[in-house]
Image (tube, rainbow over all chains, first blue to last red; front, top):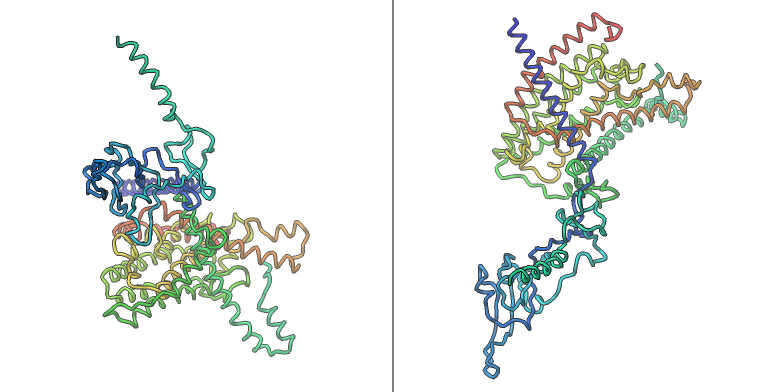
Length: 204
Length: 372
């Protein structure tokens, strides 16, 4: 009899415990209901791409020396460099340059290895088209600069988590005039030459 | 107890004033409450669907439907219109008649159960003597329809879903009936009106909530299982069996299942409010309030206000439970089939029996408080 009562008591205890856990869970979901939505209302609000964002590649035609390094470092030899040797100038002359962004994996190896810096990554990521062949950008299309999210009057720019001021957790809550936490790149750059000078004076 | 407004009597009297015979006047009245209840149930479903989407979104820190009408109110309407215009597909080698009958058998009993839902003393379709028993009887027809559609679909997942639905409904019917039985025993009647009247008179203190706390929990858990809501949505568990018995359904037949499940949810919530939260009863006894303000109980303005307040109170209580069901959906993970049957047979059933026995004992010991 005592054993049975003990069993019943243990069972009741477990039941109460599980009921308490369900109550705790309910309070968590209830608490989340009063929080601000973290979703970005995309066509009206857009996240500002981060500093190292690798978007569509920009190309400067006049800087290119047709060395084809970009083709060699590309994992799938994607860039098409169409050049002709100009005998009078004794130089390679670029006729067309194109990258198919429907195939590109945006690794930005070409940008990294370009000897003349004629390639660069932009923050453009809205590359949807009705036909995949439209993504085959030629040198003219790649020479265009993307529209910045912060300059579009139709769009509310929202900062990503890493670019928020200290103790602000949601992009919607951050006032646009408050700088992010920590040093900005230009501040780091402004601080570096000094150190170099110091090193130079130390060296001799 | 003041009977409140009797719309039927007023309506019939008005028509008789225009020279209609009493029989004809009553015949004109008859379809009106039915139609009103059908529309009310459908609108209730639309509201429940909208709430489901909005509350789910809020619990996940999203916004939810926003552009379809103000605050996305028209989203469920758009859902419905889409389903109406979708192609009706009958799978190959299925049984077309059973395939059609399945959703029909699921939906009709649920709508029929609205017969006994009271929104006021006379604001219901019929005050049946067997009231709440009718609902229990009708709700046990539903698993037959589910089994039928699962079998007729010629699909393994649908069959498993149908079998699970049947097993679940049968095992949770019993604790549900036991919980109802305890309430019925206290009010000495199966009629929903009598059940509410037994609770009213003392405001919030008189509600069955205080006398049947275990019964309330029991009823709500069983009702959730009957409605196949999370955490008991095994028959349509997406991760395991696609959509259970709904897998092969499309268009209007799927819409019937969808409608049926939400009507059932709203109905269960309404019945919880009727059985345990005093139905249309206001938290403060209105008769007392009217007496304090020296308003006669025959005052027509008071009667209209009381009637309106009754409807609002019933709906508020019901939608509070719908809200809890939605919140539970995002809180509790789905139970396994063995856990489900364990909970039903080894936990809810004994507790229901003990609750019933306790109620019987208390009814004998304290007849003034437990309706002797």
